[in-house]
Amino acid sequence: MVGLPARGKSYITKKLARYLNWLQHDTRIFNVGERRRMPADMDSMDQSANFFDPSNKRAALIREQCAMDTLDELLDYILEGNGSVGILDATNSTLERRKVIMKRIRERAGTELNVLFLESRCVDENLLESNMRLKLSGPDYKDQDPVAALEDFKKRVAIYEKAYVPLGEYEEKNNMPYIQMIDVGRKVISHQIRGFLSAQANYYLLNFNLAPRMIWITRHGLSMDNVSGKIGGDSDLSSEGIQYAKTLTKFIEHARREWDMKQLHKLTHSHFPPQPGDTTPPNPHYQPNDNNELPQKSFCVWTSMLKRSIQTAQFFDDEEYDSKQMRMLDELNAGIMEGLTYSSIAEAHPAEYALRKKDKLHYRYPGPGGEGYLDIINRLRPVIVELERMEDHCLLVGHRSVARVLLAYFRGLKREEVADLDVPIGMLYCLEPKPYGVDFKAYKWDKKTEWFYEQPNFQLKRAEDDMQ
Image 1 (cartoon, rainbow, N blue to C red):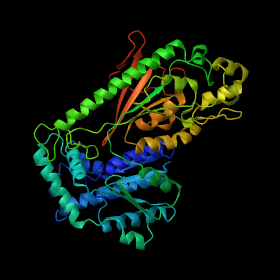
Image 2 (image 1 turned 180 degrees about the vertical axis):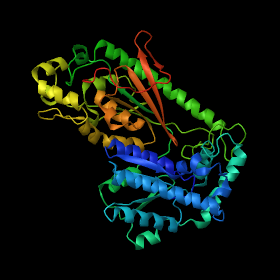
Image 3 (image 1 turned 45 degrees about the horizontal axis):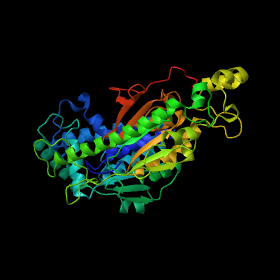
Image 4 (image 1 turned 45 degrees about the vertical axis):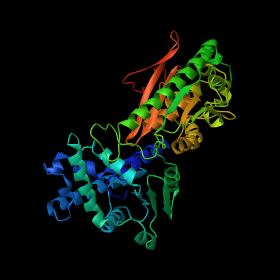
């Protein structure tokens, strides 16, 4: 990473690492700032703006040592461990520092290891102000006076700016690949992107946005095949499933109105520049019109091509919701075992049953069209990129395998957790992308009251039946 403080580097690294891990490429972030803040390294040293002044020789030595130790840890992960991608999250804002980094990499890894420099720049003053104020809740300024902390942080940034050399001329003369992101995706410059993983990163980074929005994920309502325990197929909803579909429509309409009210409240309690009592920095990508009204967000409803998914979304008004059916959201195809129960599979295909039980993530059902979880991950990749690109709310009505894979992406789960997540029928999940990550809520449907109720402190867990 390259860039001045408060330019969104850590935000970008977290999203990129989450995406690459989801694609099954082992990726880890190595943050120099976290190492710098370790008590053993700091020896209770002051970390105000003075710590980043180049004339502070002792601090400069500590910062240099932290950077090199973190880089060595990253190289150990790739060269001696099982890592595919290591991300060095630091400013690396001088040409000298980047030369030292490249020298250390080539000394230890030779020329075989691909290196991609990724710079984040902010030229939008509103976005920069918002980024800086988010820093005040971070570890360097937590519980400090916000006005004094913001002033100190701006001094720190000014110190970095004096020696800052953006990516460009030197890298191009020396044929070094780089990506330069301006205003967190408003403009992206790519130079000599080489290799599969670098191309994947570049593709993903082209589809960023910071717009506040809700992404809802649920399985279809109870189907006739669910009642009989059959997998796959294309059956209709049961009467209970129809009931779920009606409640889902009412609840989403309620949640949509509630979200709009919260945004208006935030608008009245956040300002540029900050005022006493402000709760959050305003989002530069979501500003009111001349009448101080926020824009009305569109709401998309995406279903699979299967009847039970389409029928679950049938009560949404086409005038108010943009409905779309897509085959990418179809349930995992069980090949020759479509329409069977798990007990009948164990009886008729014991060898296949045992193989799947041993390694469900890598198992693929035999027969024409048979799929596995890695196939689902692959076909959901365009869906993920579109969800990252779009600024509208979206409800995805999918199936068990699809819900598992989508939730694993947004929650940044480990690969071994994906295929066994407990995502029962009747659960509704809400994800709100934020500058610091993704806010997550889960709601459970109550059949008697015909409503959804939030589950406090909800954690995704492994399903009790590991075959399903």
